Image (tube, rainbow, N blue to C red; front, side):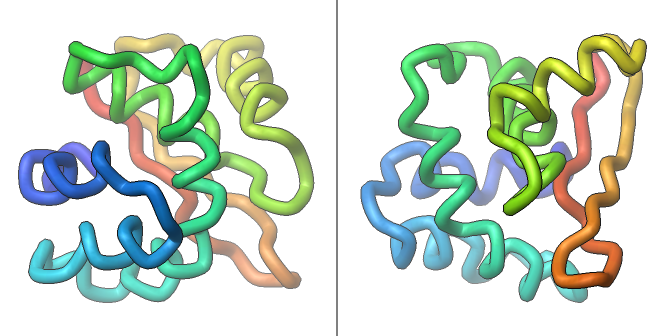
Length: 114
């Protein structure tokens, strides 16, 4: 997420629909992860609309989003953030969160280094 944030965030942060979220990743060269981002579009939109979503800090936005989408369909974004916090994956560690989605591992998010 850190590698593509500068390219996707201008449109992603303005997204109001699932389609807007999906369009924000167009041309971002996300390769093999494109399908996962499409599958997570509704959840990403939900997280972006949260009152607590950081408005200013780039890294805080990336980390909030990554921590929030760690368990799609299994736990809420809030619970996902709580689990990330309790697991000791503090905000200064790059972490890849893999989740179970329909029985297969899916890349859910990549935290940025702070």
